[in-house]
Figure 1 (cartoon, one colour):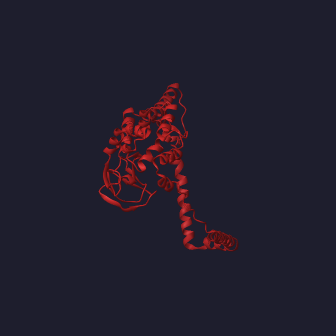
Figure 2 (cartoon, helix red, strand yellow):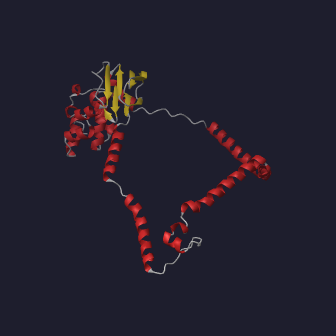
Figure 3 (cartoon, helix red, strand yellow):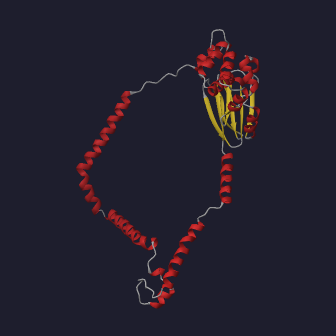
Length: 318
């Protein structure tokens, strides 16, 4: 941005250089066109104020591929909101690691591993002999081996039919004393009829495995209904310290002070009710969509959100 250009002129020039209209930005970011025009024309009185303005600027910068923090800093310089920007860009204090506790834990774990290895080498054979001679353990192991042997013996019988089960009544009548061996017929009619029967049996599962398109459509509709009936997610973010009360499905889930730069996430099935002592100090997002302010700037506000608000928020352009 040149030294003589203002924030609004810079934002408008960047948008026009990319060939993007305000309507396209509004459709992608769900920010009303009148708010976008107010940003470019620097009509700050027409904007909600507080953290909502900075949220709008970050969304527009992300869509245009610009530096979000740089554009917010330009806005703060233009509107003289330097104290708030300093609070947002403050780095958190990092805690020092307790190396003594970490080293002590490593030493204890090494001692436990070494002790277990020594016990296995020193007393392993004695423990194995004691297990083998113990009457209870010996009985349990015998039952397990018997059960595993019975399952292995039943597997071929259940898994594959024997040859005698596939014999036809004609073959059984021709050789009733055979023990399951296949009888070779003298003419070719029996040989020809056998493969046809086998072919008909193998083709039946293939036809039964075909899927019904109507069943697939009903399954898709059921999945869509399940997704639509999912839980509602509300994110509450504080730009300034404020007193906040949140109720989910008629049950109070939070009531107290919410410090600046802190955020909370709640879930509900039907509705949320949110009230704050300062409307423009709280930013709400319902299922990832920005919610309009609770009320006028610097005034207490209250709002109730339901599933119908998802459609209304999208229709208003937020």
